[in-house]
Length: 242
Image (cartoon, rainbow, N blue to C red; front, side, top):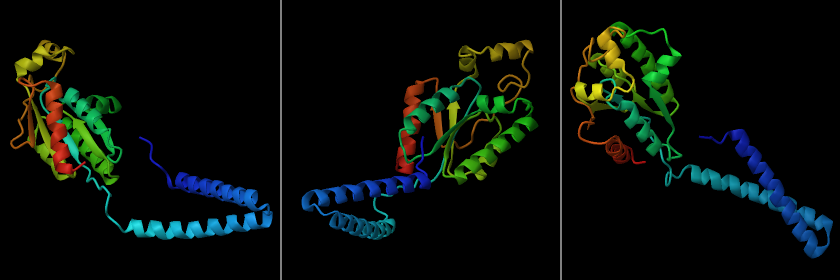
């Protein structure tokens, strides 16, 4: 998404004013054949319209009609590995990115871990890792950027920490039975975990603490990813008046 800078807006305004003034000067000269009159008309027209525009902008800057202020939110998708978090979150992101006035950032555990590959999967390391993610989200929100995040985040305490350290935290529990997740295991992570090739995998070696009071529960055993993405999308539309 491209954002108009003040320098670009100023340059556009100046170039438009020069073009408009030159057009007025040429028209007056064409009708009256007097260059002095044409230049005078161009100068007067330019000064007058700049003054009118200045007053006009000041008046409209104090009028709230038509303005949209979106409080930054975070959609936090949590659930077992291969429950469908990333797929649904990606679909929601695509649905919301059409709103030009909504600044969005997509965060996924896979991408973040590629940036910080040395972090492990023990409970303490997971908590430290997600605290860093919380800080990143807080920084993004301070710049009016909403976040769509998908992380296993298996512990209630770290999810509460993120809730308490971000704005408009929406906890979305992507629910799926362990057997269902194993059937979807196109990465082979569960099989590797059973063989001992992967350690500390949630659902096998580490517990997953189900959210006590999530804002949304998405049952991937009963509904498709597209249907569940629509549920989240409609929730955002209703609660944030996009």
